[in-house]
Length: 122
Image (cartoon, rainbow, N blue to C red; front, side, top):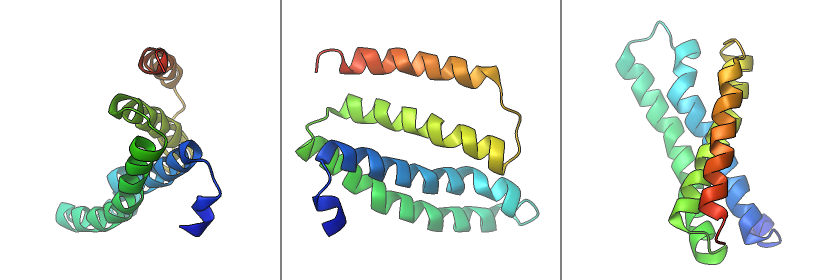
């Protein structure tokens, strides 16, 4: 974690949440492409292994965000949801070859409102 020591706590939080979300998105949806013909329990076991990496990044991200960057739990949650959408859309379009939908834009705009309300009194 010495590399992170020179980075502000708020940025550490965001970077760790982005990295954790890449793993979680792969754990939740990667098996749809990679293990499509495998039994569901094999996909679940592989996903759990990937999710472990996600937790090893997400737990420190939330601790740093809460304890050092002084985000509230609500702010951390909304931040995670925005990051989830920002990671999920490229993953769905580029990796899973799903069509890019205007609905993603509308969802993002709703999240902008959520971010505003959660962070407005900070």
